[in-house]
Image 1 (spheres, rainbow, N blue to C red):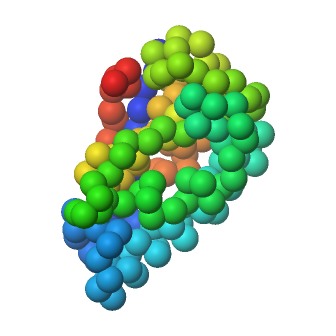
Image 2 (tube, rainbow, N blue to C red; image 1 turned 135 degrees about the vertical axis):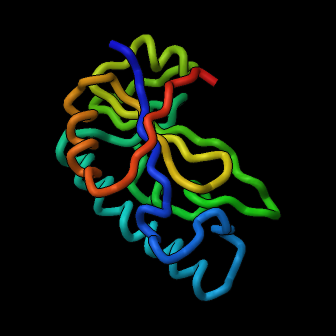
Amino acid sequence: MKKIGLGLDYNNICKDYNTVYLDRDNNDKETIACMTKVLRWFKPFLSELLEEFGYGIYRLNSDALLGLDDIVQKRFFFYSLEKAITVQSFILQKDPVSYSGLTQWAENSEDSLLIQNDEEGEGVYFYFDEGSKVHQWLVEKLKDFSLDEVPFTEK
């Protein structure tokens, strides 16, 4: 099946804040409030997704099971002017499988979801098989948000 993606910008969650300026090292009241709102939104959202599909969380190149708190943290979601941001990928899937890279995941994964942070720290991307149950679930759950269709690239 063809891998496709949906991008979710944080401005869907923080409607009254310009999310371009979400720097995880910024301590002003509005920035902290928005980042907290994003983290509080993602935790139950991802928890429901994990429960709905019986998924565990794994790093792309490891079959060690991770916890929800390994994803839902400032270091994954937000940019730092001082430290930059590292593009990270997590795999949500039923069985512990390790992949050598995005190409291997794209070619060999079934019934899984890849979640990747944005290089600019403005949102996240979800990648999956087009037309899959997780695709349909995401579209339904996020129907009130503006989503960007993004092509899957094996970068």
